[in-house]
Image: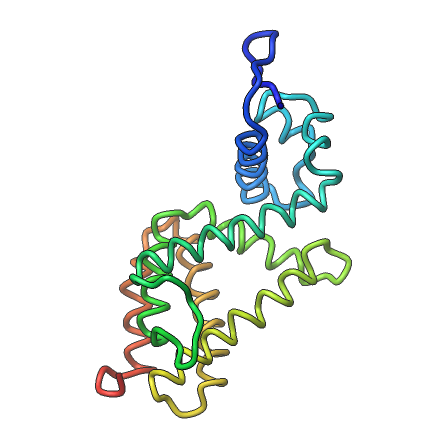
Length: 204
């Protein structure tokens, strides 16, 4: 069982707690410095353990990065389902329309700018095919677009595929502007203006 550092000594803590501690520390560091701007030693220092302690759980920096992304996506989907009153985001027909899905996403993201920053930074970095998260973001974009397409179909829009692509691009762009403004922009309010033009209320 891993040990928690207390002064010059370590106190044992459950393995799962240590894993989450490392992932949380890496999440903050990547969001602030990017993948290339942090080291495993930085993570270890944040957790008050040795670099070997980090490597005991994650065999490489690349492996830790993917663990961070998977953990965030799993946690985010659970939060999104809870906010929408759903057990899961799947099914045919899709359980929620694109307007409700994206509005819930905006409200959720306004409460956790550090997570939005993490994804913005990594999406930009991973445009290079030699980045360890390149494949992850390629696959992630496809399943997000598929969900948006199904949700847009529920909203009975013309060409759900095109609407899904446009909505995802608009969401990424608006979230970037929101972060750049120091979060002074009303992310949810601006998104509502956009999505109401794309999907008028009478189509729901």
